[in-house]
Image 1: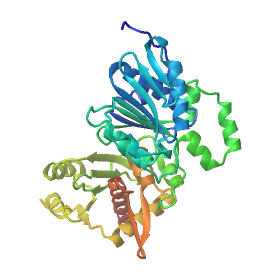
Image 2 (image 1 turned 180 degrees about the vertical axis):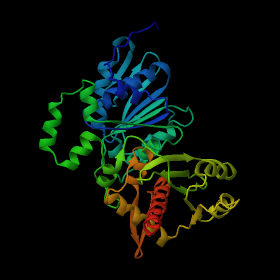
Image 3 (image 1 turned 180 degrees about the horizontal axis):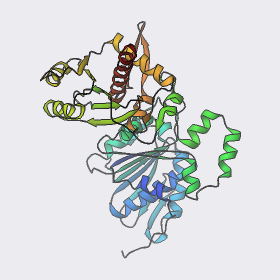
Image 4 (image 1 turned 45 degrees about the vertical axis):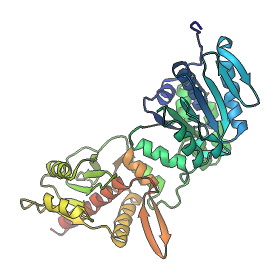
Length: 395
């Protein structure tokens, strides 16, 4: 068939950047009324024009999928439509593509078919099995996927995957759209914000309109303390001490330097072989005091760093009790607002960090599948800074 012009709703800049991110799998935490549904419908229609085959939109239940299905019908030109099945919520196109709007209430029914693009809508309200199933359907054709939803606490797979994407894991993209972005983009009037703040509790408003998780029980630092310490960028000034957490296997090596005020002024995060890692740490740290993770395989790395009489490198072995003391020191520093840190991967790991009581012991770490390398490096740096301050005091 000949060319058909498709007119779609214009997207504001931040909305377009989110849905048209070049990453294959993109996670978007978005406020209500921010245009996430419209944006992803436009994106998927664009995919349909480029990739012939099956395209899925999956929501928690059929009625939620129907909202997007009804909007899609209005977007697709009649000249492109071969058949519309309102019972199954399917749009067949004359190009040979099929656009299906499915329910995720029975994830096992989602397996088996290769799809050319996918959208998981209201992801924070979908079961994790939905993500697993839809993700598997994109494997063979290596097709793109958009995962969108409101924030709904932090103890769910969507929140965890968003933190992974925000941390820059390969193949993943991350974006956040708030109600203020929607106001700036002309999607909604600012009066809506005042009404929502008046009618809703603070926690619900933060989740629905600011895309901020309010469920932080189990976090030893306190979200408001972390947010109070956050700044857009690294602090100024040369580092006076470092903390280094060494990456093992799939983990990251993280180096954090603090200036004379104790603020984070240097941040490095990388994955290299041990030889490259040793040389890189040595070149960045120089003669500055540095507390290094020497647990397990960290011992020979520390020996390499201490070569040539480098006494500024000090080892720290992580055990349940030593990690507890380290994290309680960091928690106290955050609660007392004694230093600043940059937003991004570091603050994201701090917010996701948690403690659990198991068999009478307190265990600290990242949720399953996530990293805590940045948290450990920061805690080491702060411990070294406190030690430095004590030395200066007694002099």
